Structures are given as structure tokens and as C-alpha cells.
Image 1 (spheres, rainbow, N blue to C red):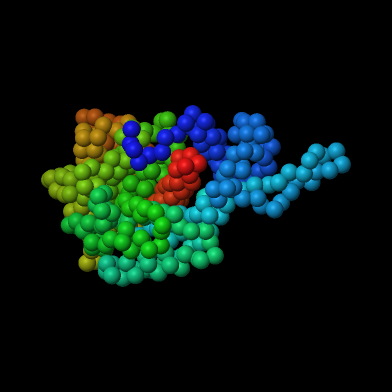
Image 2 (image 1 turned 180 degrees about the horizontal axis):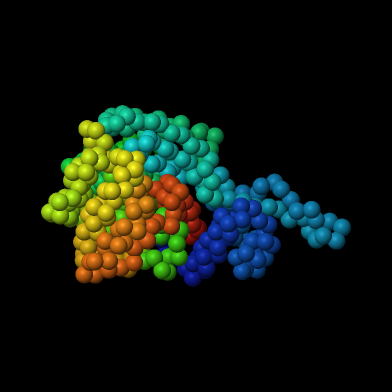
Length: 376
């Protein structure tokens, strides 16, 4: 037994479980009377009342000041309770070529503050850091509940140990070695968690779908940049350093049928932005004659993913990938091993959705953590 951890009696455990049910009921319904909490949590009214008392003493629940009508045959007047503002908020930050977006998300999943900043191309680390700091600072309204944690998406590879961005050859965003954890630490009382944009898009896809049927898949991101997220047993696999899914340098078939790096296919076809390895999406979509070549190249990447990760299906996202799902599916049908291939179901800001979903999930987990509910 860990001597630093308090011993919880059976009664403590029961009370903690009851308090968690009450907190989660208030997360779903925003305000409830003690009687309504008893019904929602499946407990007796006296037990609900005791839980409300404990949670109010700990600053997690507050009396809203609102009352039920009551009187004249309507029963006793009831008080409405809600989560206290001190439960806090979470910061959701997206660092992308289009700019920086910082959103404050409350315990109900609502955006209570939002700020955005543009950035130049190619991006300079100092400029990006300043933009992140400004956006986070603008969203940090002192009149709002405190920020308990921050979740960050970056359109660059991320070192899983430190959260720093890693500059790899041919990465189109070229932020350099930015340290989002250090930049955002002054704005959050708790952890700052950083991952790359494709992993967040894959998490959003899984949350959007039936999780029972989307536990093992590969999310192939085909946009200005190239990436892949591997989801195995319901979890995104990041690898030893966090670089799982960096597919730009996988060998595949080029326009002349010879082996070449995936990223070099776009250079050979003249589909890169000037002075960058970023893919020119508008030009690519406007040149259907190149789509068969691109589909064949993508199928070579899929062959490698199937061989190494054994996914149940391939999900294609990004700004141009879903439009080429048909040709990619046709090309992949010639592979020795095949799995179903489909476009991403979530198309509306999947990266932002993934970051916000994680921010809300972790914020709620902090509020319902055993340390808050044990009474010790």
C-alpha cells in the first residue's frame, strides 16, 4: 500500500461513487433539485441531500438561488443546484497553417471564450509562440472560471515525452522546435497536453462513430500535409517518440511506376506550393488526370499500413483525400491484402472537434477525481 495515499473505508468509497453520480447528473442537466438528483442518480432523496451538502462544502456544487414554484398543492419549495464556477474550464488550442485558435471550454462543453491569430508562411517559431500566447491570453478572461488544463493540436510531429514540436524533412508547416507546453503553462493551472493534428482528427472520428465498431482503424490524412493515425484497441498509438504515422517518406509507386517517396510524387506532378513541400490542394483537385497516379501512390502507403498495423478499415480524411476515395479504393483492390476503405464520417473541423472533446473529457475527469470526492 502507498503510505502517501489516504485509506478509504467502504463508506468513503460509497460516498465518493454517489458524489460522482451527482456531479455527472449536473454535467448533463446543468441544474437540478435534490429530488431530481435522486431520480437521475438512482439514489434516495436523503442520500442526494447528503451528497449535495458534501459537494457544496468542497466548492464543487452551489445553490443557484432559483426555487421551484411549490405551495398550494405543489409540494415543498425546492432549491436548484448546479456545478460551482470554481470547477473551472479547459483550454483547447489548435496550431495550424491557417492560424492559431484558442477556445475556453466549460464543464458543459460550451465555448465561453475564443480568440484567433493569423500566422505567416513559412511559419517562424517565435511568431507562432507569440500568436499562441496572445490567443491564449485573450481567451483568459479574468471574469471566467479558472483554466484547469490545456489540450493542444499542432500540424507538426510532436515529441510524446516533452510535447515539443519536431522539425522533420519535408514537413510543410515548418514551425521548428516550438514548445507549446512552456508557452501555455502560465495560462493553465494543470497539465498541457500536446499531440499532432492527425491523431486528434482520428480521435474525433472514433468519438463521432460507434466506438464498439471503431476500435482498430487507420486514419489516412491527405491534405496540405500527409499523415496517418493508427488506432488499435481504441487507443491512438504514438510509438516510442510520438512519430508513428509519419508517412511522407514511405516508398510507393511514382508517376513513372518506379519506387519513390510518397511526398516526392506531388513534386513530380507539380502539385506543391512554390518554395514549399505543402501540397497545393486547389490545383490537385482541379487536375483529375493526375488522380489515378495519386490513388496508386496512396494505395502503396495503404499496403504498408495494412502490413504493419493490421487495421480493420482505412478512414480517409484531409482536404483532398475524401474526394479521391473512389480511385484509391479501386487501386487498393489490387493489393495482396485489402480492408474496407471509406471517407471520414466527420468532416466539419475534425481536428478542433478532437481537441475540444479531449479537453472536456479531461476536465470532467479532474472534477470527479477521487481526490475531490474522498473527503480527505
